[in-house]
Image 1: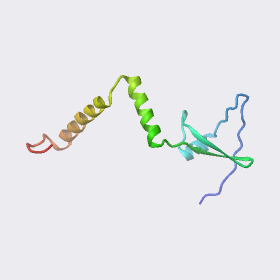
Image 2: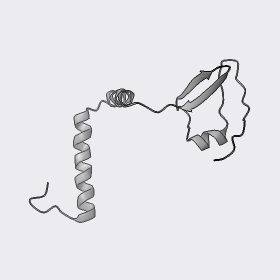
Image 3: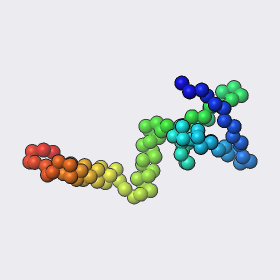
Image 4: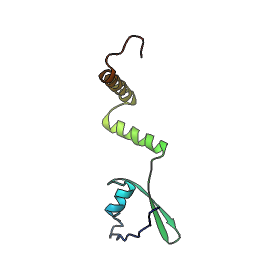
Length: 98
């Protein structure tokens, strides 16, 4: 296990905290990502926020609504894409395969 190195960052006037680039790269954080901030005594633990399944569903519904696309349309398009990829990879489907 690698040694933990303390990093110093400044909280700006509006409460903004910049996570140093090296730490963002190590943790896979990108601009716009959400983090959990957990107070522990007089310290903080900051961890990447991973979507729970219900939150992921809400986000997907929100994206589909904003795009004006239904889940049925996405699934139909997915089926077409899978069939095209199958044909591209293996050639035409023979009768009896679905």
